[in-house]
Image 1 (tube, rainbow, N blue to C red):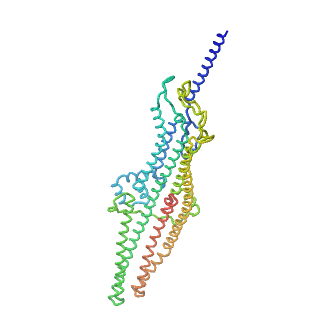
Image 2: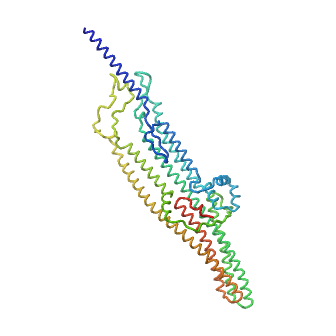
Length: 512
């Protein structure tokens, strides 16, 4: 009877052991088949889906896809300047060949063509584009770092052959990496790319603004040369009249000498204007990456719109579109993600990870187990709710510094927005003044000074007007004509500066 009871007890233990072993195998199989969820980093226009399960290779591919998307955004030359696609392609072919470009510039060229050529030829833009592409390399760094570490651990892990098939020791930290850190890395790189893209757009915007200002300055100099040459011709005619009157004894020798002095002064001013024109042409050649010496640029005259835009809407547009502000916002978002990643990796987590299961049955199961399968106690220096690393406080100063830096960046953004509003007001004021003064000189002063010039010249020939009156009338007409040309160019320059400050192309629809 005693042996019968022992047999039943042994049979019961065998069944119980088999059932436990089967349960353990099922648990072990489930743990091996588990795939941790990885949330891919979305594009800035897509919402973040925290519930979508994706593996690490999917997130890696997503980061690389984001790199390509950012690259397509950065390589678009029309990010600031609006342009016709067919015209852009034609000018891009010309921009790639110096000989074709020089032949193109020997013909009268429009301001919009010069702007497009600047986008393709400017070395400052190419340098900014290179830095932008360099920042995009960080996407692959963020994507491949964890994957490389994972593969390294797969190839270098040691084999445990004590029981079952040959298998390696898999660290839980490798099997269950925290996906949020990788997503935060992608966010940080994305905001870095956004800041680099704004820097590239700033270079394009500034290069276009420089070309526009150079165009209007060159147009003024060409107009000033024509007016000065015409006035010098008028003084030459007046000199002949004075010489005839002197020979007949109707005027003094001093009048003849004074007119000759004025004529020679104007001829010298013509020489100065020619040198100024060469200087502006050299500046435009530099923007186009050409040798400034042989380049002579001929322009098609344009007329800027004389109607300034409404001031009130410009403040909101500038706050929204100015690249410097957008860059600061991107840097603030980057700093926020960096701070979040630091807090994720340093500050205490929501769990002590006491229930993590290591795939190491030889060391943790059976009579030869050297350590428990699960944590059964906490260390003396780790109370309930303490972080995984008890010395996290040593990094708290870094987090405090990052928080203070983030607060400073936000204050700088507010100050930059305030400065932008002031700059918009000043640029609009310059445009409004140039518009009003252009209208005044065009509609009144130039025509009136020309009438005074004709009357005084006929009066001097007939002896009814004094020499001082006729010289003053010639001088006033010269100054009025030069002022009109200057105001027209100032209006074009003011449009270019207003567009530069606001950060959007406002000139294309306001130039005829």
